[in-house]
Length: 250
Length: 242
Image (cartoon, rainbow over the protein chains, first blue to last red):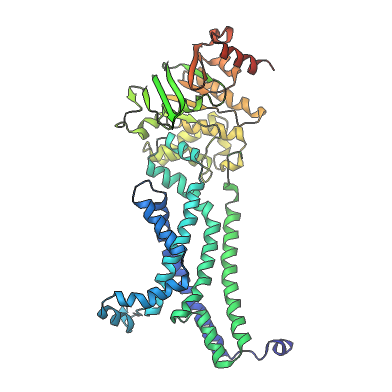
């Protein structure tokens, strides 16, 4: 009762459910973006560290472009700009609901245009940051480690796969987890293009109930919870890998 | 077995190696010494093509190292190399450090590679540590593992790049003991080291380098008895009398 006098009446169950649904959407978009941006970021990092002439400057240009412009502007660009570039029939198809049968009588909804654009925009943006973390992991593996692998007769590719990459990913993991946290938080900007994720839902609840504090407090709590989980995962991983640290004397 | 002819190398306009020439016969143990920055490590890394050179020729077991047509990985797989800072792969267990290249480069089966790896670990007295990670071993132990790793490829020659200079004094001997044993078994060895005790004991010849050039290349007794060049005399008196 002290709580309710401090924070006002609790939200009705229906509105809490809205928020939980929003959290679900936030988690879904974030998870997809984490996977896709890691794949794309990995390719960009490979390009960035490659000695092949056009690859490195091209990757560098991509990274500079997507890192140095605001995410909100990028989302608006894709949401409002992309339809102009696509043929009208394609847009019509994207904007109308579709079902795809995946067998066994189960049908999947084709995701909404907002969902597709949010995923696309967040992925292209986040990949630039992920690429830089992976690249600094790769360059963080000392040159003599490569030489030792080469001296054993490994080819360029074998050196990369068996010696450089495992160490690079270990070096890159803590900053990568930081980027994954950013992805979760950045997904809130997708509300601006109408994706009903956690932030959008909290706005909705607030305008229906006028319980401003409760609506945003619960949303904030959800975000903190997700970030804390990622952090705990990172700590668990680093504890597991403690013994496999550096071996070279400093 | 290793023939180095008139090898010169530049970093930009700075010459790091100048017309280095020497030969290493099968079963010979050569110690390369000289002040820091004299090009010793660079020369030894030219032998297995880790460092490119611009002029001259190095031929290992009939294969020209500097020839762009030479498949360097194949050549390197036949020459063992031991580094100053050990360079074990920190993410792999000791035994996997020894089997990785055997499996990936030589195409040996896992069982065969494991057996070979354990046998070599036993030889350097570290069989009990096979399942540990490099970070759990002392520097001297890591360097012995590194030697075992190089030997696991059945090399025709071994290159040592200052193998004891990063070690605490009490660990130097455990590594030198392994090297002495190797030398006495007839392994062809080229060792960059300042361990003159080791040189006296097993080296056939000593090469002294200064400013990228081979200043002195003499049989061990001659070198320690009376070096011809003044520079080598100075160097010797510095590292032997204190």
